[in-house]
Image (tube, rainbow, N blue to C red):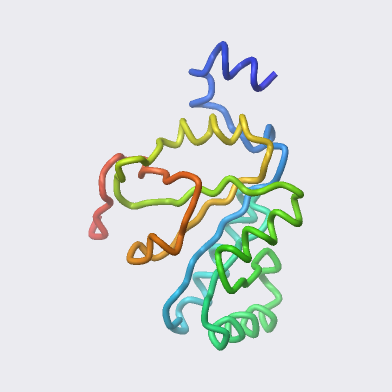
Length: 167
């Protein structure tokens, strides 16, 4: 039914919630490559709770440094508040974990704060997600390291322009 609607009435897609029609789960990956300060722990908890509210299966934190990973794990273990969070050493390990769990490779979407040449709109990505049978992986990360965040597609900002931090 979803495929028939996509082919006959793609305009309906813009208003549709796709979550009930996805065959696999949705995941959020947050790439944290640098040294983490103490304020990050509250951000992680808040983001985890938001992910749960939006039906995300797991918030995957990619933290390359082993000492930083242990620090975050200890903080999460002590709080017992955010069981939705999983800490991983790399994007590839996160993809492998999702593939094993869902028995299908994730369709990875890098969230960008700028319009890149080959970026797609949310509407185009929604269509791709509905056409695929795999899980969705939304990737957030440091803009300074785009090469380490290889994804299937890049999603352009909803506003279509660079977001100003002062607004």
